[in-house]
Length: 315
Image 1 (cartoon, rainbow, N blue to C red):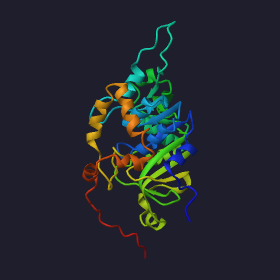
Image 2 (image 1 turned 45 degrees about the vertical axis):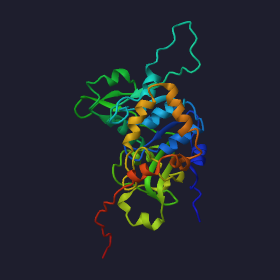
Image 3 (image 1 turned 90 degrees about the vertical axis):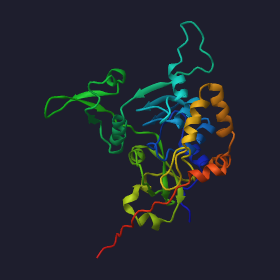
C-alpha cells in the first residue's frame, strides 16, 4: 500500500508551502528542484523568504514572478555565464523619491548575504540544534558591517574574537534526490551539497525523486541514504525535476539553457513572456518536458559509468 506521504508536486506545494514561509530549495549546482520552484510560482505563493547557497536561475525566476520578499544567500549568479538579471533588477532599482508614489510593480527585495561556509554553517547549526556556529572567515571582511546577523563572541580558551552565525531553520525545505522509497528514505550520490542539513534543519520537507523504488533497494546501500523517512513529509515522483540543472546518473546539465536565460532576462517583459509559456503555461513538470525537443533530451541523457559493487555481507 502506498505511503500517505506520496503525492503530486501540486499537492505537496499546496499543503506545505505557505505565504510568508522561509523556504530552502536545496542543491549545490546539482539536483536543483526546478519543478518545485515552478509549482510555487504557479500557485502564486507570496512574501517568501528564499534561502539558498548559490541562488541561481530558479530563484531568479521566483523573484521575477513576485514570490520573494527577501533573499538569504551566499554567491548569487548564473553559473558560468554572469549575473542574475532579475535578482539585480529587484535589488538595484532605485527607490522612489520622497513624496513620489511607488510604481505598482515596485517591490524592494531584502537581502542577507553570507559566505558559502557561513550559510552552510547556519544550516548545520539548525540541523544539529546548535545556538550558533563559530567560524573564522567573516572577521576582516565587509560582511559583518552589512549583515547584523553575523556577530562575534570571545573564545573561552584564547580570548580571541570569533565570528558566529545563527542557526537557519526553514519552514519548508525542498530536496531532490536520485531515488527514494515511498516513505522518504532517499539515496543521493554525486555532489551532495547541503541537502542533508537542509532536510534536518527544516520544519517540513518535500522530497522529490527521479525514481520511487522498493524499500529493499534503499536498504541495499545504507551509505547512500542521506535523507531518512522521519524528517520527510511529502514524497513526489518527479522525473526531470532538476532540468536545466543535472542529476548524476540520470541526465546532464543543459548548459545551452543557462546561456539562453541570460538573453531572455535582459528585459522584464521578455522574462515574463518566457514565464507565461514555460511556467504558467504548463500544468506540471511532465507537460513542461513535452515542450523540450526530443533530440535535446537524448543529448542530455547520461552515459553509464557504473561503480564497482560493494559487498555488505557479514560473517
